[in-house]
Image 1 (cartoon, one colour):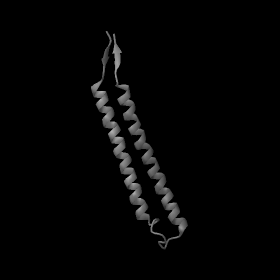
Image 2 (cartoon, rainbow, N blue to C red):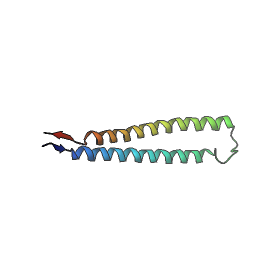
Image 3 (cartoon, one colour):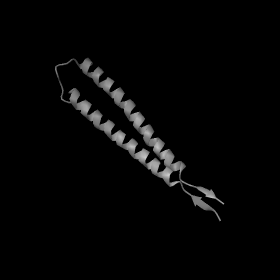
Image 4 (cartoon, helix red, strand yellow):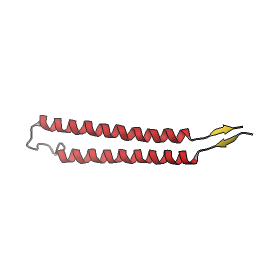
Amino acid sequence: MAVLVRDRAGRAAGLVVFVLGVLLLLVVFYLAYLELIASGALAGASGRPAGDVALFIAGKGLFLFVLGFVASAIANKGISLYQASGGTNID
């Protein structure tokens, strides 16, 4: 008779890492929103040249993209850990 063995610690760790990754993604989206509002790009003319504003937003956007990429990679590792500890059949 086959018995399904599950790694409870691995599953819990996978869920914790996944939730951490999702929380980091939420923080990145919030920071992106704050930076967009603070830049004044949504308010229209701010007295600064459009090229300077575009360069500033592009630089901040690139940094936030990297942060979002890292956060999604962390969430993906959590899912992988959860799946890997799903269980094996032992005869």
